[in-house]
Image (cartoon, rainbow over all chains, first blue to last red; front, side):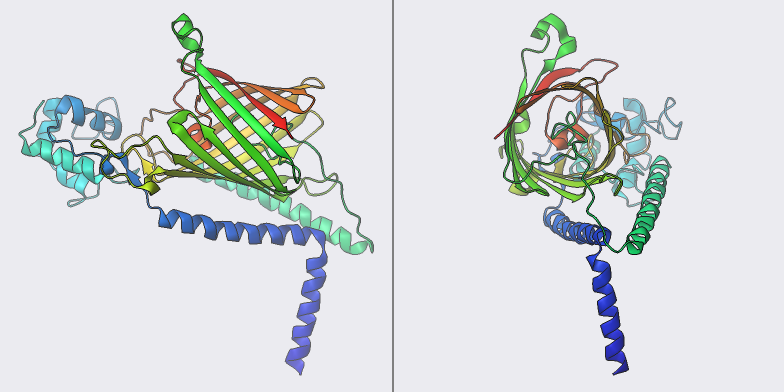
Length: 143
Length: 290
């Protein structure tokens, strides 16, 4: 009995509050936001992102100047250069990139198989790009 | 750090407005009869500020026909006759389902994009009442230009989709000055793994300043907040200046922008022009109300 009356009291109080306009707006807003969150997450999770690189045709004969240099310039030299953050190894020209790939850890760092994955922000490189750099190495580093 | 700062500003801002709303509630309790407050009308005259959406919605049953146009790069000069060549067009419609919900569809030249949108109002700014107009806006883009061929063998339908989710918060400060803030989230199902981001957060801001009965000057900007550190993006933040010209039944907006495409996804994530170094596009948005 006691519980029922408490419940009753809570209900009447709740409806009293609900009748006030401000609360109404806020509650409608919140419920709409929640609905939206559900709707958008369901759309997003059912539509995972992929990259152009990963759905494009495989590059069969990558060269440094055509394929590798643009990636280094965009994703690496912001730190790995004298004009950037001055981080070693520098990746500004053919010799430096070849050296880092052949004798350094460039490939395993971008793969994430040794140390922390590179680049450190903005997510891992597309798998197709990593594979391309690997292929470039396997093909004896065409310039 | 920047993001944190901006977010904490937001938080403080909302807390303050929430607290003042609480005071209002207490006042309402004191008076026996609560009276309805008038809605503050027309923070913005157009449905768009320039490229960004404003907090205005069509009223129930209204249909808007939209034609927008952006000429080519102005800074190329006589080579493309100051932008006559390589123009982009948007053609579309917006329908007010209720006073708080509008749906829209448009076709853009850029990427042969079909853009669908929904705009819904959470709260109205009231005279001596609630201080802000709050509107949600979502768009879904379908890129119909992509082709599954030998260059793009892995293409699936879902790769064509891109989304924006926007929260538009505006306040009309006086008869002539209105301001809008908009946190924006852009998500792409297909993106360039080197040049672009899968998810992009932006903070947009826009304003209107009325300069005569039929003219108002608009300005908008959106800053990208979550670019990777040391990342030198080939894209820029969109900055657009516009002039609203109101004629009976029409709103005509002249704009100068560093973004040529008009779909929200591209405006916020793929603005290629630069106000400092070329790539400025002139154009107009024309609305006809039925």
